[in-house]
Image 1 (cartoon, rainbow, N blue to C red):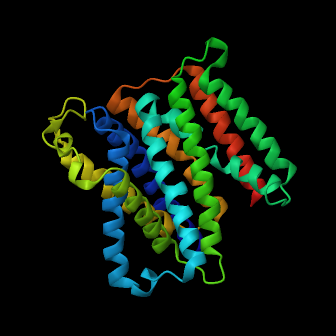
Image 2 (cartoon, helix red, strand yellow):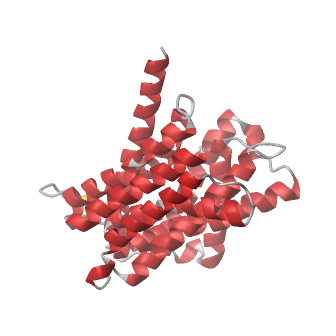
Image 3 (cartoon, rainbow, N blue to C red):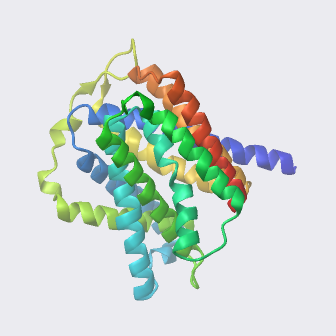
Length: 307
């Protein structure tokens, strides 16, 4: 019985990782139409927030309430620093880098969390975690092929590292919110993160100036197939690339430990690279593939040590 539940959990998380992996190619195809990364981030978080709001209003209306100023400040930091910057910088990164490379760099976020916990919060970090950090950094050297004159786009690499740092904030602030005196459930936490990100983008770039023309017409996506509606790809990004995988990840946590779930999550860059190769024709060098494996191995070592 326990094995069946564990299998169910892995199936849910691997499906979520696959959906996120495909979403990288969908998002990059939309970015290639000319829409800015900020506008794509805006429509993704805003409409995903709307979907989650409807779900929570129907199932757990009490979670729509914010418990005081302290939680408001925490949710604001979670949404503005964690969600807004992570989404935007990720889109910048995949626009300038191969999708798999961008994800490998972004996945160094858990290592940044370990550094922050050690030096900012003065908590103990096992030695094995530092070994994982060293292995992951060695892998990043191979991914970026530094010895060959750093062939990757520098802005793209900086954006991916920025996305990793923002994702680390997402983890840290999210953990504080989940384990506060008045803990918040993961689904409403995600919704509120998207809500603050949506409010930020609405102020920075009002909706009445949104370039809807980028979502009209069709777009070649699958090799050998008819072009797909751009609006349909945007809907895929919002529902199947954001809302559904977040929900599946939460479902998996009923059956898996955090360590098992994080290990399953390591498949996302691999799946994203495979989809980008099939759909976008992105080919990684042998060193980049090996570097990705080494980096993910280092992250796995650090995660095991931390858990």
